[in-house]
Length: 323
Ligand code: CP
Ligand code: NVA
Image (cartoon, rainbow, N blue to C red; front, side, top):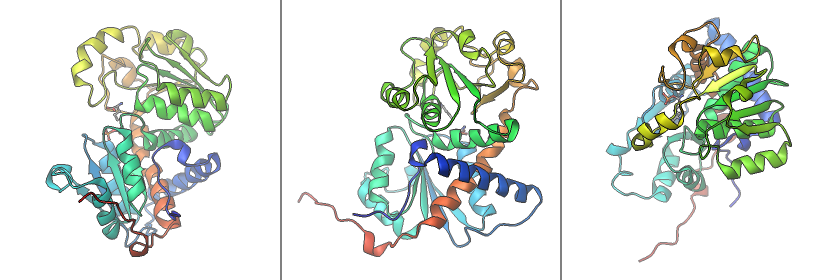
């Protein structure tokens, strides 16, 4: 069936040209917001948020983004919907597509968002899975463009766990003109398949080492994330031991470029992956970064919800059901 909607499950769902256009539009929306100018581009539109994991930034920034663009949102606690009681993704997605103009999902296995994307006739946005966190990295690119004028030609150093945030960085580096050097302990590298495909696309621009000092040399951006992500709580003690030596602290940041900025998607565990000193230092831009979740996601929402008009009733797919 021909799809007349777009999803944002991973960075590579957008072309490089679209990323640039959306960054530009997001910045323009931010400037309007700073001047107190109202926007109504999503008036009458409503998105649903279905979160299987905790969230502060993603949930609130998406909800506020919709309101500031004249639309609205509904937070659907999975525990109080029929989803938790076993209603299938195929049925839930087809029903919710009759009411909503888009759905933001945060869940565990990435195949779940792919399944929603298959059945929903409205855009599905990945608000974080175990594999990827594309909204985060898109909005981080916005912060980098604001602070450094461009991401082009920069060197981003990612220090720590090769997790969902790291995987989305790899995808970003596979399509945009910047270099990415990652320092991860052995066995904690980014997803092997994502890394392989990315490296095939941009030979030599994505490097993985076990040495954080090597990774930050000459870096414009030093980025880190927690050592134990949501869902890995049981591995926490073991990970704390494994990741010793991978903390972004003053000693490490000193070895980066002289104007290097420090980023973290938050929430942070000060004293673990990042020292309290660096987190609160003048190089740290983590709160500007958090704010830009709001502005970047406005760009994403406008693009997905305005560009494509779902024809709901004509487009409902049929399932072969077992008797
Ligand atoms: N960075 C981020 O996604 O934060 P939340 O988990 O609070 O949404
Ligand atoms: N890697 C972290 C990111 C949180 C925004 C996690 O998945 O918990």
